[in-house]
Image 1 (spheres, rainbow, N blue to C red):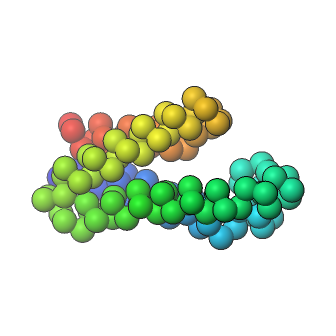
Image 2 (cartoon, rainbow, N blue to C red):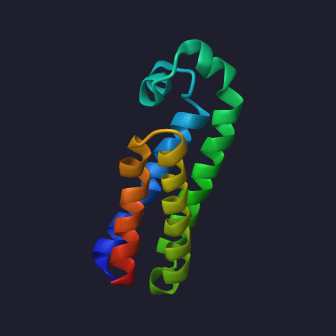
Length: 117
Protein backbone atom coordinates (compact mmCIF):
# COMPACT_ATOMS: atom_id res chain seq x y z
CA UNK A 1 0.00 0.00 0.00
CA UNK A 2 1.39 3.37 -0.97
CA UNK A 3 2.56 5.63 1.84
CA UNK A 4 1.19 8.61 -0.07
CA UNK A 5 -2.25 6.99 -0.27
CA UNK A 6 -2.25 6.29 3.46
CA UNK A 7 -1.19 9.87 4.22
CA UNK A 8 -4.10 11.19 2.16
CA UNK A 9 -6.51 8.74 3.81
CA UNK A 10 -5.30 9.94 7.22
CA UNK A 11 -5.70 13.59 6.20
CA UNK A 12 -9.23 13.00 4.91
CA UNK A 13 -10.03 11.19 8.18
CA UNK A 14 -8.61 14.08 10.21
CA UNK A 15 -10.60 16.56 8.13
CA UNK A 16 -13.80 14.69 8.96
CA UNK A 17 -12.95 14.70 12.66
CA UNK A 18 -12.60 18.49 12.37
CA UNK A 19 -15.94 18.71 10.56
CA UNK A 20 -17.51 16.58 13.32
CA UNK A 21 -16.25 19.01 15.97
CA UNK A 22 -17.44 22.05 14.01
CA UNK A 23 -20.89 20.63 13.33
CA UNK A 24 -21.56 18.87 16.63
CA UNK A 25 -19.97 21.19 19.16
CA UNK A 26 -19.14 24.55 17.56
CA UNK A 27 -22.03 25.05 15.11
CA UNK A 28 -23.59 27.95 17.02
CA UNK A 29 -20.29 29.27 18.40
CA UNK A 30 -18.25 31.98 16.61
CA UNK A 31 -15.78 29.47 15.10
CA UNK A 32 -18.55 27.26 13.72
CA UNK A 33 -20.60 30.17 12.40
CA UNK A 34 -17.49 31.57 10.71
CA UNK A 35 -16.53 28.22 9.17
CA UNK A 36 -19.96 27.75 7.61
CA UNK A 37 -20.94 31.39 7.09
CA UNK A 38 -24.02 31.17 9.32
CA UNK A 39 -25.88 33.85 11.23
CA UNK A 40 -26.43 33.36 14.95
CA UNK A 41 -30.17 32.90 14.41
CA UNK A 42 -29.76 30.31 11.66
CA UNK A 43 -27.12 28.42 13.63
CA UNK A 44 -29.35 28.30 16.71
CA UNK A 45 -32.33 27.10 14.67
CA UNK A 46 -30.35 24.36 12.90
CA UNK A 47 -28.09 23.20 15.74
CA UNK A 48 -29.70 19.76 16.09
CA UNK A 49 -29.59 19.13 12.33
CA UNK A 50 -25.92 20.13 12.20
CA UNK A 51 -25.08 17.82 15.10
CA UNK A 52 -26.68 14.92 13.23
CA UNK A 53 -24.68 15.80 10.13
CA UNK A 54 -21.53 16.00 12.24
CA UNK A 55 -22.16 12.51 13.57
CA UNK A 56 -22.24 11.16 10.02
CA UNK A 57 -18.94 12.89 9.28
CA UNK A 58 -17.56 11.18 12.37
CA UNK A 59 -18.60 7.80 10.98
CA UNK A 60 -16.72 8.58 7.76
CA UNK A 61 -13.63 9.49 9.79
CA UNK A 62 -13.96 6.34 11.88
CA UNK A 63 -14.19 4.18 8.77
CA UNK A 64 -11.09 5.74 7.23
CA UNK A 65 -9.11 5.38 10.45
CA UNK A 66 -10.34 1.80 10.80
CA UNK A 67 -9.12 1.08 7.26
CA UNK A 68 -5.71 2.52 8.14
CA UNK A 69 -5.52 0.40 11.30
CA UNK A 70 -5.96 -2.75 9.20
CA UNK A 71 -2.79 -2.07 7.20
CA UNK A 72 -2.73 -3.69 3.77
CA UNK A 73 -5.83 -5.68 4.71
CA UNK A 74 -7.80 -2.42 4.93
CA UNK A 75 -7.68 -1.65 1.21
CA UNK A 76 -11.37 -2.36 0.62
CA UNK A 77 -12.43 -0.46 3.74
CA UNK A 78 -10.43 2.60 2.67
CA UNK A 79 -11.83 2.46 -0.87
CA UNK A 80 -15.40 2.17 0.45
CA UNK A 81 -15.14 5.07 2.89
CA UNK A 82 -13.27 7.32 0.44
CA UNK A 83 -16.00 6.60 -2.12
CA UNK A 84 -18.61 7.58 0.49
CA UNK A 85 -16.73 10.83 1.17
CA UNK A 86 -16.47 11.50 -2.56
CA UNK A 87 -20.19 10.96 -3.15
CA UNK A 88 -21.08 13.11 -0.12
CA UNK A 89 -18.72 15.82 -1.37
CA UNK A 90 -20.19 15.79 -4.87
CA UNK A 91 -23.72 15.95 -3.50
CA UNK A 92 -22.79 18.75 -1.11
CA UNK A 93 -21.12 20.70 -3.91
CA UNK A 94 -24.20 20.31 -6.11
CA UNK A 95 -26.73 21.20 -3.41
CA UNK A 96 -25.07 23.35 -0.76
CA UNK A 97 -21.76 24.98 -1.72
CA UNK A 98 -19.28 24.53 -4.54
CA UNK A 99 -16.54 24.95 -1.91
CA UNK A 100 -17.33 21.41 -0.70
CA UNK A 101 -16.05 20.08 -4.01
CA UNK A 102 -12.54 21.24 -3.14
CA UNK A 103 -12.62 20.66 0.62
CA UNK A 104 -14.20 17.21 0.66
CA UNK A 105 -14.60 15.62 -2.77
CA UNK A 106 -11.20 16.44 -4.28
CA UNK A 107 -9.11 15.04 -1.39
CA UNK A 108 -11.22 11.86 -1.45
CA UNK A 109 -10.74 11.53 -5.20
CA UNK A 110 -6.99 11.99 -4.81
CA UNK A 111 -6.94 9.34 -2.09
CA UNK A 112 -8.93 6.92 -4.25
CA UNK A 113 -6.62 7.57 -7.18
CA UNK A 114 -3.55 6.87 -5.07
CA UNK A 115 -5.07 3.71 -3.59
CA UNK A 116 -6.09 2.35 -6.96
CA UNK A 117 -2.82 3.26 -8.74
